[in-house]
Image (cartoon, rainbow, N blue to C red):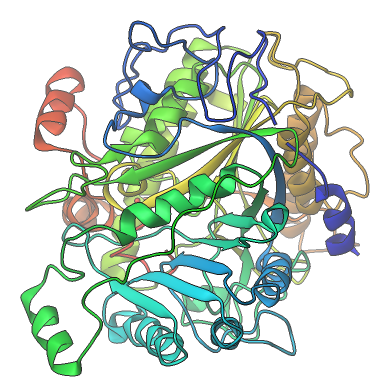
Length: 596
């Protein structure tokens, strides 16, 4: 069974930052030597040219100054972590249920979510999300949560579900706040869980990624869909097949994920910045002020071979910035601008959108610089909404971005979508990137301007110190060496997409992109030939780009920029960006799309 094989392949990993040069980093995240200074790429990223004087650069990770947010308590990165990919909601929920079951008296459970459905089952026969959290409260654990307040259900959002989850946990003695401290049309899109044990720090764990505690997420590698489905585009049927990813972290990185939660929790700003919400909340007697959290524990002990850097997005919030990010934070965007300058052979992306020319430009620049670089992208076949207004804007933003990368890379760019063995499209909700089998990221951040500048996001970038011995041992040719976590993650995903039983033809990047191309071509040809004969193995098909008709494009472009893919940077950066590049036109929309 694919799920069991993937679980076995996932069970190991991570510690000191692995680079071609000796590491001088410490577990607290001091920076090592050996990097070529990064230069800014014209895009949504705004990366500083190099580390500040006295700060040692790193080939793959952002230094403290390159994060661009001196107000945060977050460390540059941590070492000695165990990192395990949890591909698919069913696998993640199963492991999460065990972690929540383990939370007892005096333990701490922290979580954030974009959408939370109280009745979502973590396993086929239960328990439910709310049942697990309530039971943890009753056992004496301290349970705290931050859920985006969301928009009305009639707009296909989740305000009622999020409120129900908050109220149920609060009644059991926990505290879950509905957080609307965002820009207009923005959202809190971070999705993570932390479980800490004061008496058993070796059991501390955090989960970071793109999987909400919500309907439609509990799917597996067979992609038959979650029986508890959320309302969705009719093109995906009544039970949408859903592809997603999370990463499980153990070791010092758990403390960093907790710090992300604490910074948001301790924000003194009102939970809602909209006066009509504030009035109704007072009338309802809603919790308006966060209680004090327990004192933060020391780091958990080292647990593996991975260095982990947490990457975030926070916008330049209007009418008073975040105290932990007064001008916002764009370390997600800055990290991609930096690592893609080091890409030489293969960049693999799974994403819900891949919108925005401002984001696509970073990939296009890399393709132009490196004539041997391949880009393989897996996206959903269709957007997640059917409405004519959002559909045209979605198609326009997506088509413009793909046109840009294809113009830069030609046939070195493959954009594909996924179906299950019944021929039903799979909704790709994962946010994954692997660069040269060295650096990998799993997070909540999509490849669009909204995720890179406007909504709160969290990703875990992983650099495994354990080299992979399979050839090619150094695919990028820069001395970094292939790393176990990054390569295993890519191969796990590609085995599933190609229906492969082993890694034959998939380890070497050049062979691998050929295998992908042949598999997608064979499946497309089978359909074009009337589906005669056995269905070829594999689930990937060449992705078709759909431009809206000319008469819709002007309105679609305006809607795209203002609603689906807004820019959350300070005004001075937007002005500088337009003057220097003439760009800035362009999406996940926390406020424009229900899948988040």
